[in-house]
Length: 159
Image (cartoon, rainbow, N blue to C red; front, side, top):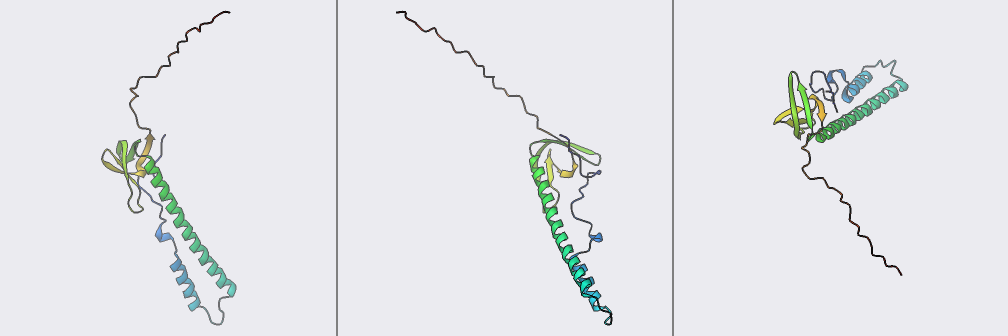
């Protein structure tokens, strides 16, 4: 089973959105308060506009909570996937470096990407490009052979 890397360069892109492009609750509330403070007293904001902006604030808060929940679920999924790789043979690629071997252990560090230990080296989960079952030696047990049971003819007596 082949597994493709999550990014083309093997770097972990994480789940956190770009902070410079996001407006958070405090920014939105600051804008709303600033707007109310500097509104024209002769032409104040209508109740409908104010309720609309409060609704937008509520939606923003709910979306941020949902985003946090989805991020946590995705991280848990990565953790479960990484744990399922222990004992399996993987091939990883990071830049020009390829590492191949059995996953010995997994390291989880405070919400960061799980790291696999392969041949004593730590490799990020996103660098995995191939996963195969571990190769095992064939069983050395002798096969069980069903031997036919001998049936002796029963002694019949004639009367």
